[in-house]
Image (cartoon, rainbow, N blue to C red):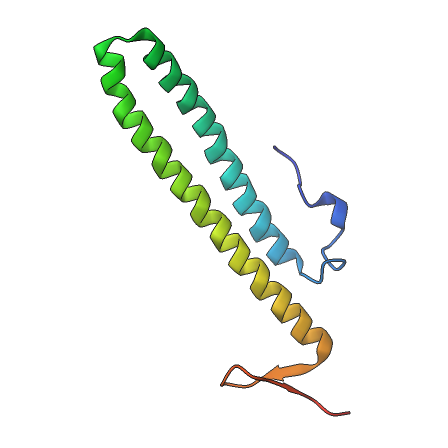
Length: 113
């Protein structure tokens, strides 16, 4: 999954987000893909160890499965962070376009023209 996954959307203005936000998303997606690639290798090794039925390999699977579970948790966290970042960037973009001002109590105040 090398390359620019956002190359089809120009500078991001079509989505209402800036280049820095897109770079952050791309970095997170690359991290997720790397973890998923690692998980694929772990699953292959776990399956081979299971098929071998050798006690040493079955014992090794305990650690491999823990690593796999931790990787899944990392992916979930990364997607959660991405979701929050995307929501915040969309809120900021919408705020900038509408000319509204968010007050300290979180309620939106719209400027009158």
